[in-house]
Structure formats: C-alpha cells, structure tokens
Length: 193
Image (cartoon, rainbow, N blue to C red; front, side):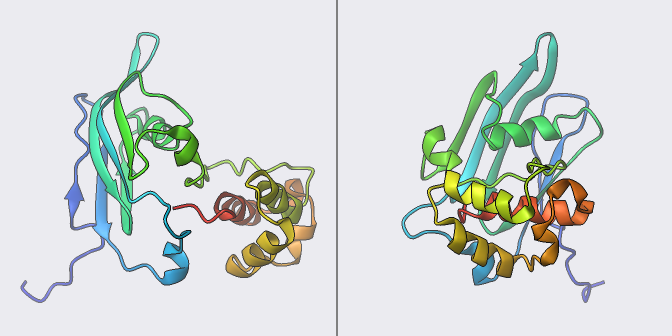
C-alpha cells in the first residue's frame, strides 16, 4: 500500500560476482550521529571502489570479478551462503588480503595502504584481543601503537563504549559480549573513518 514505510534494506546495491554462489551487498542511507561520524579534520575515507576483484587460493576462486561502491554514512550488509566470499571480500577491503587481480581504491586516499590502514578499524567475529592483558591494557596498547596518549584514549573509549569494571580483568575471563566491546574500543581508538 502507499502508506508503507521503507524498510532499512529496501535500496539494494548488488555486488556483481560472476559465480553461482550469490554474494550480495545491500546498502541503505542511514542517519548517523556526530559521535559515530567524527573523524580527524582533513583525513578519512569517503568511499571504497572495488572493481573486478578476483581472489584465488591455488585452484580455488573465492571471488570472481566483484565490483561495488561503498560510501560513508551508509550501512552495508554483505550476505551470501557459506563459501560465497564474504569474509574474503572484507579482508581485502580491510587490507588484510591482497586481491589476485582487480582494484580497490579508497577515496580520496587512493590505493596507498600505509595511509588507508590508519583510517580503518577492524573487528571480526574473534576479538583478537590479548587474553592475558586486561581490557584496559588492550585498549591502551592499541592507542600507543597508533601514537596516541594511552590514558586519554582509554578515558574516551571507556565513556564512548560504556566499559565497566570488567575491563580491569584479563580478557580471557570476560563474556563474549565484553570481549567484543573491548575489541570495538581497540578498533576505534584512533577514530578511523
């Protein structure tokens, strides 16, 4: 009917992949508050252009000709069945893997991975936090590696992510949700794009 509200994923942007495994991305415009979109002045990734990306592992083709445009302030959902290349694509976008062929450009930074990596925050299904360190020490270490004052960075992260007393315990003793909160604080401690 004419009065129906659009659902968050009504606008569909397809990732074109020449494979029977149906990898898709859905994007939607979203309103983000200033805290979510805050970046350093004069820097940042405004978008990622993925063109004809192929990734092979030996004889296995994980991605075949994937093309998509990703933009800031848009929520993007990449979906597909197991083995369709979702994680491989994210690892390429996150600069963890290099494509076998094709291109990935980060506007306005281009393809300079040194510049790009300073603008990316990465959180996967595994927290990748150091289990024997406390949550606070994990965040402070990430801040030091980014050249930031660890105490100021911890204070910002603790407030932003509402990190409680659990952060004083070793990460290995935390619940999955607590570990992911620490992982998110670590990934965003440098205020990436």
